Length: 257
Length: 371
Image (cartoon, rainbow over all chains, first blue to last red):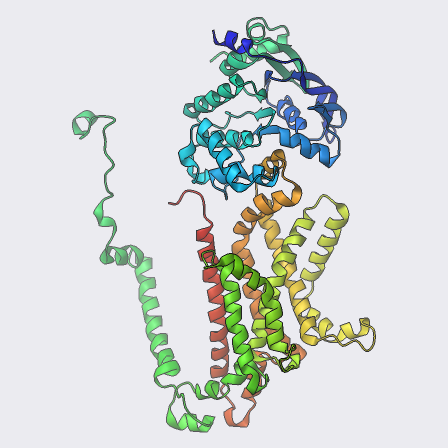
């Protein structure tokens, strides 16, 4: 059984991310309410919930794409404050993959991958190119290295986006609905890459509605609604024996088809 | 039914070439000139208008034109067409203004060096490009020394610079200086820092709200009131500053339009990778925003270049000034057509080149699907 294999993967006691009593407002709108979450190194967490429940906002707070107004977020023992140095340090260690890929259309696939290593890590170009090709091979598209993103399919673009994040050698990866903008045929090629990544022991937080993926690789599933974490459990328990009525309704709706 | 007419088994249909009847001159004429009654009518009217205008214009400008004569009266005796003899006799003045004749080679040399300096900027396959770019960066000093003198070169008063040279000097300086300034203003206007943003907005709105001529008058007269007495501040330098400021406000707005077209996700991706503000602007946002802005930027530059003729109002003798002066010459009176057509051609060649270059650049920078 694959989830048994996933569970066998080592999860250390070391804390990778700690969120304590975090609140966020957009103007008067209270988006995130008292979020508490601890992620250990090597953990793979899937976050699901209806749209507008604050799940994307929550993971975007972790690398400060969104600012939180109350509470604490500690990533790799560094607290996220307005200190630009801390933010830069955390962003170097946290990779992110977006729903709409956000590849840079004016750069080739390889240049997309090497941009941050060269300018943020100050890596020599030759070394960055080697690392870029290495990760493009890992996501199985080294032959597209010299093309521009606009010439690739959605699934290929998302795989490039994953390779681009990995080139920074991050310790934590955030996925913000990575397969939601893809045609059904391309979802599995992206999920395969993500499964491979999970098996290599990467700490991952995925906002996704791919329940098959959640069952296969997650060691915890978090359900959010109305800006709160409603339920949090191991995948088997979460899907077979949801506790709250809200979770049951959500699961019955998405598993109906 | 459908089954019986199908030539290939499902899933085995090969890629076929398109039907051949989509090309050929006769088809082109039919499609573009005679596709509907209205189109036929318009084609006939256009052909008739061309018949009326083209032969007459050709006769005037070329076939009946007079290239060699000493005065207008002499011209009229020789031929009925344009009297280009005027442009020939006055050519030096049209191009160099009152620049001393024995030093005109310096203007020519500057022009040649200038072309060498912009080549690596405009064309990324220039041989020895990195070295050439260093030269390009040094060119403003070289050009200044050649035109104005110094370092052993005989000095020339800047008021002597005139004719088309003056238009090119003002135009090129304005273009080169206003692009970076305009980009900074555009970024400033989008800044999260309130003071920077307010200053940029005020500057842009003020400059855009005032006619260029007003600014030139300020440059030529008012500045003397503000500066401490005794300071001499070169008039052409003042004009250069005003033209640059004026055009940078327009560039700022054009670039801001380009910046707004860049999806927020691009900046987020750059942020998430750990790029800093200036890095993400320089490496991610500006290359894309400027590409979108090319038509608008070139439009502003073309406008700026033509607006350089406004300096005639504050007493500088640019090419238009020379033209007007030569019209009041008793020997050549009444040749307004020739003078203005000649000046129009000079400007057209420059502006059209800019516009063609911008199209080339747009094609070169296109990185999506080519259809």
